[in-house]
Every structure is written in C-alpha cells, then in structure tokens.
Amino acid sequence: MTGSTPAVLVLEDGRVHRGEQFGATGTAFGEAVFTTGMTGYQETLTDPSYRRQVVVATAPQIGNTGWVTRTGSGAEGTDEAVFPASDDESTRIWAAGLVIRDLSPRPSNWRADGSLEDELARQGIVGIAGVDTRSLTRHLRSAGAMRCGIFTGADADRPMDELVEQVRATPAMAGADLMGEVTTAEPYTVSASAAGAGAQPDQVPRYRVAALDLGIKTNTPRMMSERGIEVHVLPADADIAQIEEFGPDGVFLSNGPGDPATADVAVELTREVLRRGIPFFGICFGNQILGRALGLETYKLKFGHRGINQPVRDHRTGRVLVTSQNHGFAVQAPADEVIDTEFGRAQVAFSSLNDGVVEGLECLDLPAFSVQFHPEAAAGPHDARYLFDRFCELMDAGPAGRSDGGSSTVGPEVPDPSEGVVDGTRKGDA
Ligand SMILES: NC(=O)CC[C@H](N)C(=O)O
Image 1 (cartoon, helix red, strand yellow):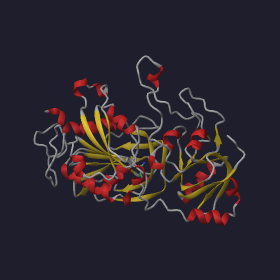
Image 2: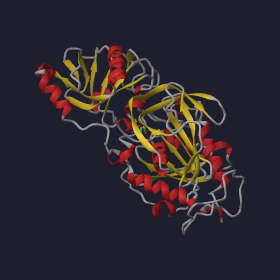
Image 3: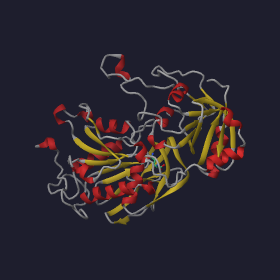
C-alpha cells in the first residue's frame, strides 16, 4: 500500500471519514453499504448486484486472501484440478468503491496470483483505508444506507460543502434501473456437467433452463451445471418467445442491482412464465420480481442485509440456514398466512432471523419459488445449496397442468394456459 495519498469518505448527510487512498486514485460515488463477511471480498466486489454501491467492510483487515484470477483446466491428477476457476463472480469489479480499516500488507493464499490493491488499481476502482469502519457501520445502521463519495489526493482537501454537494447531486438507489448496465450483451450457454448429480453421460443434460441475466453471478450457472442442467443465459430484455424457443424445463431469474420497483419488464415476463406453469426459480432480485409478479410490493430496507453470515429460517423444514446475502430492498408480505394471488395461493417460505424480513416465497398452486438470499453461496456457507435440488425436483414434476402427470404435488390448474405451453419434454428426448 502506498499510504502516502490522503483520501476522504463523504456521506450525503455531511459525515466525513478521513483515511488513505489505495487501489485507484480519483473519485467514486455510490450508495454506502456495509457487508459483514469476514472473507469473500473478491466475490463481493465482482458481484454485479453491487453496481453503484460503495462497499464498507466491517471485518477490520481486508486483502489477506489476495486476488485469485488464474483458472485451471480442472484436469485430474494435476495441480490445476484444485483451482478450476477464478473467484470472480463476473468479468469485472462492479462495486463503485471500497472502504476498509486496514489493508493486509501482503496476501497469504496459495491460490492467489495477485493482490487486492493491484486489482483495484488495474480496474480503476478507488479504495480508502484507515477508516473507523465500526463507527461508520453504526452510523449507517442508525441513519440508513445513503449516498457517498470517496475523494483522493488534492480533491480530499477541497471545501467540504462542495464535496457534500457533489455527493448529493448523484442519483439515489431508490428508483435506480441498473440491470441493463450489467446484463450480458449476447445469450450464451453453460453446458451441463457430465458429472452432474451422478448423471450418466447419455442423460446429460437432464434439464434445460432459461436463465434471465439481471446481473447473474458465475457460480449460479455452475451450481446448475453440476446438477446436470444446461443453462441458457439470456439478456435482461429477452421476451417469452425467446424463452419458449428452446422449450426449457425451467426458467430462472437471477440476482441484480437496482430497485426492483423499476423492473416492470422482468415482472411481466415472469407473469408469462407463471401463466404457462413452467417451473420457476428466482434468486434475490429474482425473488423480488416473483413477489411483484404475484401482486406484492417491494420496499427499501433501512440498511439492508449483506454478508455471508445471515441467518434464515426455512418455513417448510424449520431448519435454520446461515446464508450469503446482498440486498437493500425486500418484498412486503405477511409472514404466516396464505396469500391469495392471481396465480393461486402463495406464501412466505423463508424469513430472516435477524429482523423477520421476507427471505423467500413459494407458490402453492404453481411450480414456482424464490429466495432473497444466495444459495449459490459465493462467497458463503453452503447451507442453502439444496435449493438448486428443489428446483430440479420441480422440473422433474414438469410444468403445472402437464397431462402426463409427474410426481408434482402442485395443483394441476394453470390459471391461464396460453398457446405454446411447453409439454415437459426436452428436444433431446425424442
Ligand atoms: N443481490 C441482489 O439481487 C439485490 C437485489 C436488489 N438490487 C436489492 O438490493 O435488494
């Protein structure tokens, strides 16, 4: 760390923290949000959901695990087998800036081939170290997440009113429509892994899924691939015709940045999926969109849930899961009652054990569910990975209303079956 360049973090309410610049020099603006993970900064920074957010790490020392970019072939019997993939959750850092207390003087991780500081500099991301992140976090908890700016070098000495004014001129997170900035330009396919769920090579893929990329993390298609799912990742503006084109067994909606209240197009698409009874799974932004498709509202949380140590209760099993989370908005729904929707009955299926916030939804008359937390768990505990298996079970049962049955417990009624309903067979089944 250079340590010689001053930097200042300025919040929109006028609070100021002075520190030292690290990573890139310059100016960064975004919503100041804190994350409680002790590890996992690489996955956090490269998660597209952090677009336009300045991440405050509550863990006091950051950088210890360096930066892991090298990818291996995964070939058995070689060193490469143990690091088949980098820890990046996308192709770049999306967070707008990073606020920490101490930067680790050098990484200590046999997998790392770079350092956090070098990577921030390389990607032009401004960091500030030497901040009392405990006091800052307490402030964000009581005052709420808010806009901020990091200014480095000579800018750090400019008159404070000017800096605060500059921060206040930046757009707020409420009302932000950001998924178009992070989604893939072109569709792509992640093939099913032959080893997936013990599948025989001639049974791969076991399922084909259309995944709408609202800011998808790399580990999500990977989790699906490992279960024998061929994942067709589509840009955020894909329509129902593009999805139906390849007759998927299921539709997936990813995590993503911004305010779910702006995601009208994805909400309408989800309603089309529900009308057709196609098995549906959503994560994070995808949960908020399913909520809205069912007629529920979303709202902004005061400071959100971020980190890899967030406790959640699975209402179906009573199990407590420690989960990875990153959300600033949530679905408004009654926790303990069945909700009547246009698409039949639905209910809250998961809730936060910290504050009771809705952490997941399920439809009772259609094969559709979603979670506000991150079962792909990158970086995070693996408690919730079984939810990908739950999605597979829904796909095994097939679409709601399928005439050849299946083992589904979901009701046979499809509220409004449209033409072109998928019949549960895959192209490869003929
Ligand atoms: N990780 C996500 O998908 C976040 C969803 C949404 N942008 C929120 O902050 O709540």
